Image (cartoon, rainbow, N blue to C red; front, side):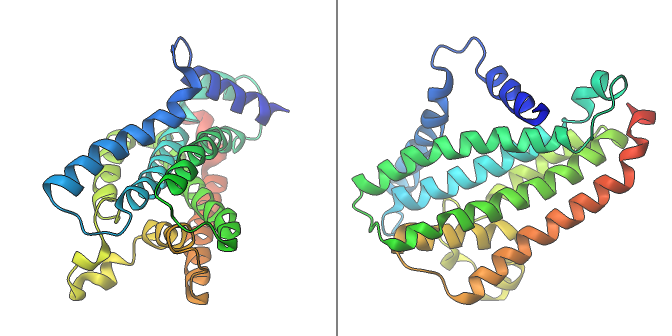
Length: 246
């Protein structure tokens, strides 16, 4: 019940006094795609097949990750008044932030499917694998969010460092460019980016209409569940010290 109330509160607060309200969940990824599509398909002559869909998938995935991690980062510090007065399992706060971002992610899928239809991308049974890709994306984001929420309690500069890190993370993830432009000698380092594997998985099933190779499933599980387990371990280890530092 509490988790449901916190998710509802976060979702309503985000669009409070907004004229378009929840419609921004549709509009934001579309406007971002439109601007970047014009720049990279016209000025830089991108040769990626169905670049609009390629770009929108990357934007939706990264926007969710960035939003979920950023909201989770302040989940403990932002609820200090509740944490110091009422006993509630502390993991509820970052989890509720990530889940409220998940609502936006699900709403963003509507314009994503609309672009699939408009660009005549193949809609095949492989699309049923999308929940697996989304599960990996959400798990990875929650793991990062738990680590950030813990760090923020003890080191308040985390929010400023995260702003820089998230910007760099966006550029090292193939959102607006194809991975083929990366020199072969750097590909091993490039593939250490967990988002690379998750975004690639989702693009294959949505753009090509086929199931990725078995190795892709294993990599997606590893890069999502390992950070989640690390986040849970770190959060549980230090949560009893939160009250002393709020």
